[in-house]
Image (cartoon, rainbow, N blue to C red; front, top):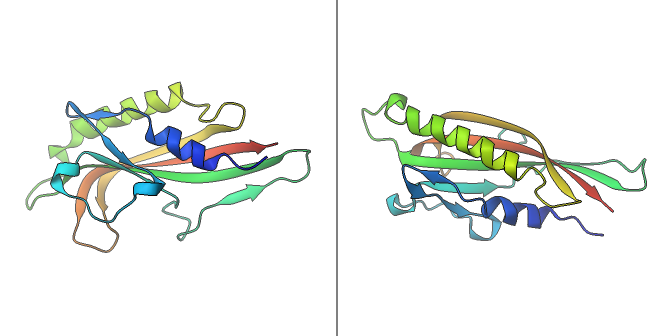
Amino acid sequence: MKSQLFTAYDNLAAMNMIARGKNVQTRGLAKLSTMVNPSDLPLRLLLPVDQNSEGRNIGALDFASQHRVATWKVTDLFLLEYVQAGAGLYDAAADLVMYVLDYEDAINANRRLVPNAIIVEDLMMRMGVYNWPLDSDGNYFGVWCSLTLKEVIQ
């Protein structure tokens, strides 16, 4: 059997999130773009890299059992709004905290991302100001969500 990682990305993208009373748009692997227009916000970007992985998708296979077990890192970057000159994190703090709480609830409800194949093993979230695209002038209030997925490939 093949990996179900693409299905996991699709299922993550299908999670309905709301911020400031608006549905959060999601760009999965097929729709990733470096362009973010103000009308796109709030926005989630599903990235195949983690901040600490130096641009590599992390996969570990355990061949000791009859099944292959893979561990994947997925980043779900939430961009709430563009940081205006003179704005501080306090301007978005309540909305970011609400998003973190809602996101944790959504992941908990969808922990079995792909039934009988992939589960969310760990979730780490950090609120702050994030640069997108990297090394650009685009700074956004947002949440960096790092998910560790465990997949049993039969």
